[in-house]
Length: 141
Length: 405
Image (spheres, rainbow over the protein chains, first blue to last red):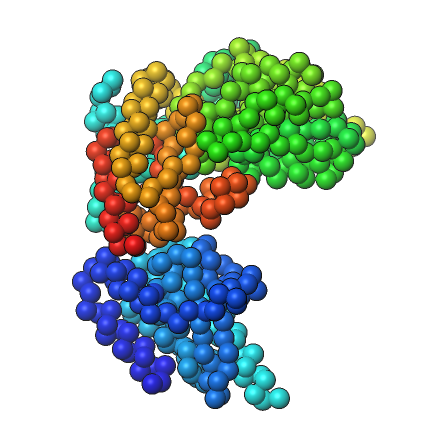
């Protein structure tokens, strides 16, 4: 699936919920399906800076696509990173770099986050795009 | 109820607002207190009727503003029972006061001198001293605490020696609510000739200290913790220390005479009050103190103790909930975690239910490191909180637990 198609799918899914409580419950659910980073990779250099809870993110290249795995010590945060991994994992670096992130506003994710958490969300996306840029540069060389 | 809680709540306009569709339950009083109409009116009155710069003009407005500002200083002196009004220095807040003292001691301390802080200090009471030690070569010693979150007094006694020049302790820990035995701490420090600074930021809204009786050398606090505005606070400085410490900042107001060859400094308190101060803030601080005294600190303490007892009991009924700071002398702060759940997750859910609590390390990372936790959820109660609000908190935490497990 393309990034846009996955984003559309998420917008549809989140539009079914009437209130924030259901959205949070769904995010917690999504957190459970997150492809987990291997325990031995949970080192400080894999931590995303700017998050108030701990978020580890790993990436590897497989058949020209980036595979993300992650984890967090907070459940809601884990749901947030799960949403992002679903969108950006198993995609080509260029597609990740080109993707816009308007879907976050459309599913109402940001408005339900405290400013500190919203900053964390921005850091997560930035980190994923950084990985994509690094792999893209490698491909070109 | 020892007093009319509904009448008190009506004084605070913010308490009737809604958050996320739910009535606001404000339990972040250790971070800052809400403001009663009396204080808000005082601020509006100042800017509407007698805003002027102080201590310099001969015109009527300037005199009115000066009189009101100096009357506030006297009010604060009386409240904290300082010997002289000039021992009360207006500051921008607690952190400013601490830095002012630290700066003064940078001229006094010598290499090898020792200063003592407690293990339960706020970052603002750790960092300035570390900077001071780096600058002077003095050594920072730390009074340890036990599992209950209580300072180990015998260890404190061991740390004291002729080398000790300064002891800095908060009256009440912001993260745990523990009330420290400052009387004994001051007495012991004085026995070895060390000066003591007490950080009253967390205690001033609960306990009215008697600075003369305590015989403390320095006491700092912030107005916003006691129903006053942000950006203003006081440093109490015992007269002899006030004369001994050099000025902190140069500027207007703090001088007696200026020529390009030599400037002589003004006496206390102006020596430490360079520039145009937070005039309105100082006056409103006085109004806040009047307000608290009109309710009465005995009644405040009694009501808050009732809230603390009830909240502690009810929260402990939740399975897996652990409270940090369980010493016998505590103020109305409950810092807790639920086993297996991150404090941020709990904070996020309860906020959606209209409840304001603090989550995180509370600017006291050493305490979190001590307990090996990332942070806590902290509910801190004020005299305007009710038992029903405690119930709302407990129900919200239960709901969060259900969702997050």
